[in-house]
Length: 87
Image (tube, rainbow, N blue to C red; front, side, top):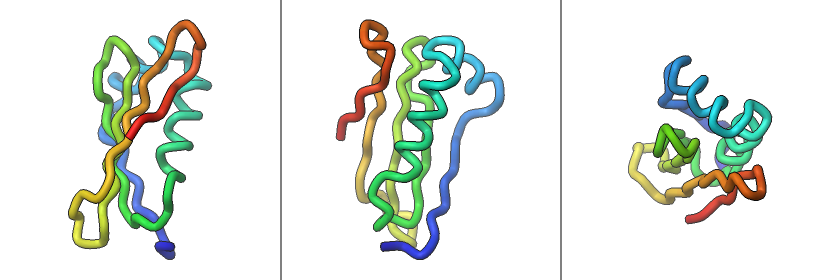
């Protein structure tokens, strides 16, 4: 387990507002929390907006050198009003 995790969110305020409008603020923050805390063996995670209109997110987990090790997508399901997470 990494002693610390560096979480970088690659969305500006306008992009975040667009996603929150599409999925709801609570769902957005819940997804960010899940992606930020998933598998803490990787010391770095970069979270990106995947598709603006759908609210999809993408998390890239990296080792200390920045090499990509794992990727998870968070896809918003409007019918369930919740995110699903897929690797």
